[in-house]
Length: 227
Image (cartoon, rainbow, N blue to C red):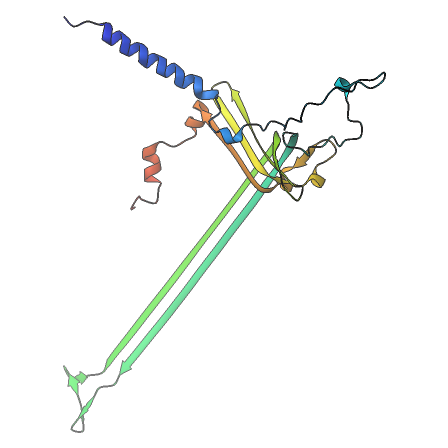
């Protein structure tokens, strides 16, 4: 009788792999979206005095808005787009050709007792119409970090927000370039002020799967369906 130990080992390994796959659900899947750490300044000897203490430096005269690599900036999402398109086409064409009966030896050619004249008439018409409309809206806030400071002073920012609610996950990502002068005093900026913006909003989990067509339904609704 074969031993059951190999089977038990196989089931144990499969269970561990399944648990590892579940554990990776909340792990970052793209390292390039990780928060950028600030650049550490070289260590200098503390300059404590009777009034000033280096550990309590409050930078009273510095700008609290993000301007260095690693600084935090809040982007207010105010995306709203709307597009519509309508097209109408109508064409028609009429053709008419008439050929008189030929004359042979001074007499008109006949066919079945009638003049052998010929005529050709043609008509072609086409009518087509189409319309399309689309609207999108995204509001909210996402806090990002400054990943790079360009030579002209503009800031390259990027960041993401992962929300795990009940049985689903919502992932928001944004990256782009902002001007320091567009940053408001509360260290926030509207998403409409972000240049080269790349904004993505995706969902994963049972709720997202319930709103997704199956592969067979997607095939019947794809361009490869001949009907």
